Image (cartoon, rainbow, N blue to C red):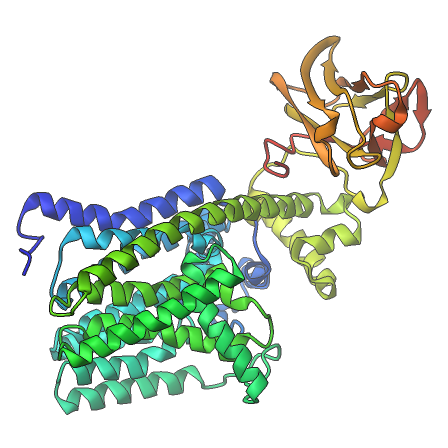
Length: 580
């Protein structure tokens, strides 16, 4: 057996680094892509903060159902910090990062219990825990509920392996804590019982564990109401086939980079891996030492089964959602750590080596896809925050775009009014951006050609101007030629210029102009945004768009004014993250 890594100080530092690595990477991800914008499931709690502010009763909300879950710890966290943070969901994201360190520590404990503890084999586990395949969990404050659930279940297993009554009590507490976070944790009841059986603990412990978890479940379901959007499980053959497909895809999701084909292929590989691992543990009579890693794999299987049976009928590809990747990752972590420690298994090195290679390649693909998804996620959140903060300018279809829930418009207007008054959520920050609000009502300009330049005289609508964008489109895809220049002038001097090849404009996009330096005290100043082209033939040019007036100014093309319309110019939209 490899020496105890905790015995030597250098090894202890390595272990600490491996445990903290996922939390650090996750915190960096939050710093890069986190947003103060609330999603609907967070915005839903606006009435609670209003009740708190008005001195009305609110404590019952802590136990109140959130869909089929209780998310008690998540509610307590954001109620605790909302006063000093202004209900900033980024704080919750950092709490999730801290919980990731707790999860990694628990996995390390289970790895040591399995019979080996060489840090090198734990590197893939650390990297899986901070994979950007989980970007939604990382960048959505409410998803602390999943981290509380995973941490509670993993540490319940850790304490069960201690074989003491104190350990059993701690395990019951952890399992109960997980259960009041999300209902997913109900799988820990049979899994924990299996751990007790595999480790040959006294039947009295089985009874205490079972009775305690049954009691927790009874309390959980007191007053429980089945969510209306979740229909009863369909046991028909067609529905079961759909559930089985979702089950497989979910198991393959950590490394699939969002690909349906790869998720199915990797899911089937994971099913085979689980079968090999479980059969090897039983055939080699390593049930006691490997009870913890077997339990980890069963958490993933239980979660995937619940997603397949309970969610696949609602959304065909729900199994690939980023928020479930944390659970399915354990289907790789459990067998990987367990197989590492099965020294008597024939072909162990080849299996572990092959699995390590698959994890390595899969993590590269998953992180590349996750990085792009994280960028898109932030941009979407920033756009929603902008629309919310400028809600008085927005048409109803713009307000609907915040949460995509048209039936909730009255609640949205009411909740936004309170958040603005209380300076909570996105209203804690000052926004200094402007884009066209009535984007569905755009009108194309004439072609931007040598004889018909576009020129907008604008009264600057922002305090500090950093960048300008001009929306353009091709008249005919692939037909545009020449160079298009966009210049910005303020106070009689040129402050920014950009040039693009018109052939690059294949769809509607923005030409970005970064100013030479930020223009301070811009609001109220005269700006001129001009677009010119060296192409003489209009058929080979591109055009821009105008919208119902959203800033003070006059737009002309070829010297002729365009009445009652504003040229499609954005102000600071790139630096704020609304556009790429």
